[in-house]
Length: 134
Image (cartoon, rainbow, N blue to C red; front, side, top):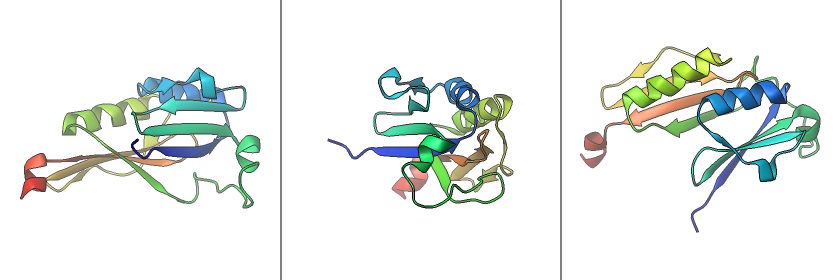
């Protein structure tokens, strides 16, 4: 079985966040969602768990950081192409997110970034397969 990652994020407005992650094309898993949490399947090995801040706090002994004012993590996803990175970033920004920084274009590697409605920093990265072979 492949190792999976479950990215758990605190959110202020669960309904707003559900609309945002749905707009990106991620699938809501109703089995692991309720009035306090929403489970979104990104791929076979990646699940994003959105938890209302009160619920999230039950799992942590530290205070919740405000991702709008400080960065605690950079969450990066691979993209199949430059166009896919652009498409997803544009959807994120038009669906309640915001631009995190200018696109990164290193020729063999291209990236776009956005902040979700709670300020969590996401990166979409495409790497040219030919560059990986060399």
